[in-house]
Length: 218
Image (cartoon, rainbow, N blue to C red; front, side, top):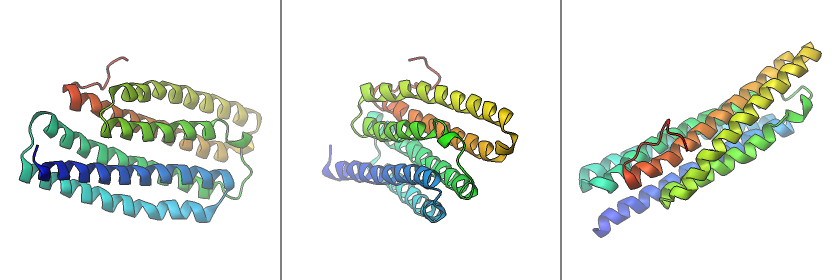
């Protein structure tokens, strides 16, 4: 493999890791803003979205240039195609982090509903899923990718638990309805981020084996 082509791949990995780190940080900080009722921190997350969008454009341009200049085939072509999908997924992760930050602002002046139910636990799992999904892609680690897929079921169950818990709270305390609705939105955003992390992990199988894992049972 020519050194120029290797350089294209290494640069793409670097950019993807940078974007993943930014998106993970936005998710983590949006939840910290929610937990601490910190409007200023939430607004920082919202402003950070422009940086992610800019990096998405940079990565897309790099991929197009690599395809044009290097004409990759087989596994290398699949790598670049998957990288573009992952870039789009990471941009959507950042969008969900913005949604959470906006909920944090809306809830900043009100008491927490049952200390955020299971949302902090969901956040920890989702951030870890994102880290492992990107690592599985960079290192083409199918075992790690499978582990990410399995954790998605855990997030789905926690999301259901949050929904049922909030429903019970609102039934007993109707005045909490608006706050509970925002927390349900946050839980939904986290559940969708977990889905995006799973999508990223599934690209590993497409690269290594040309296998499409979406909708397949583990």
